[in-house]
Amino acid sequence: MAQTHFGYQTVEEAEKARHVRGVFDSVASRYDIMNDVLSMGMHRVWKAYTVGVAAIQPGMRVLDIAGGTGDLARAFAARVGEQGCVVLTDINEAMLRTGRDRLLDDGLVIPTAACDAEHMPFADGSFDLASVAFGLRNMTHKEAALAEMCRVLRPGGRLLVLEFSRPAPLLQKPYDFYSFKLMPLLGRLIAKDAASYRYLAESIRMHPDQATLKGLMKDAGFGHVDVHNMAGGIVALHVGIKC
Ligand SMILES: C[S@@+](CC[C@H](N)C(=O)[O-])C[C@H]1O[C@@H](n2cnc3c(N)ncnc32)[C@H](O)[C@@H]1O
Image 1 (cartoon, rainbow, N blue to C red):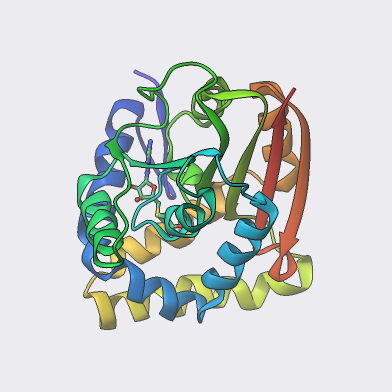
Image 2: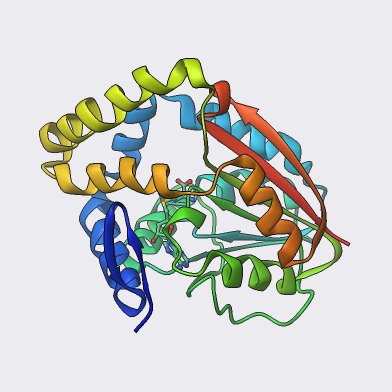
């Protein structure tokens, strides 16, 4: 059986999704607070930048993949207007339920679908824009997931991939210290779960760097890909156009 990585561990491909589900089942109820603590609020800035680049127009059909607790879906929903629509998807029901409840608390009723990004229940060309924020690195077959994201977009549609990436060399040492010492400690103290936050640090190191991800997106059918580095490359937004 083929093998893949789960953080720094090697696991059977068929088992990775179960391990990832375990992580997000464990963190779902504390996900939002931990996001704010671990990124020192920066994830809000990275997402706001992504929403700006998305340049949503009224009437657009938007898909938020691996949308978790729905930060991007909420921002998109405020912009598509009555004629447009936003669909929130995630493989993990605990994350999706937390997201749907938060959106309902804000008075937003958004269609949600529990599905694997590698096999989505949408017809070809259903969306004008798709986003995947901090989700791609958890997927077992990134090439298959990117090809599926391309399939559900109309020609000319755009995919926005917001993800941790490779920081500038000067940042690497302090970033490693933060990731491997402080993050698991904060995870243990606040979420009572050091292992999930160790996985977070490891999965970031195993994720393709900016240039490699750009190549994967091109291979998946995105004829043009732009890369926007943020925080010295700790995070990057890849914008692919299906053409
Ligand atoms: C770090 S969270 C990001 C959530 C949200 N997009 C955000 O930026 O706050 C990663 C999400 O990816 C989801 N995920 C992991 N593998 C997936 C897959 N194969 N298909 C769809 N979602 C997946 C997880 O369940 C989790 O909710």
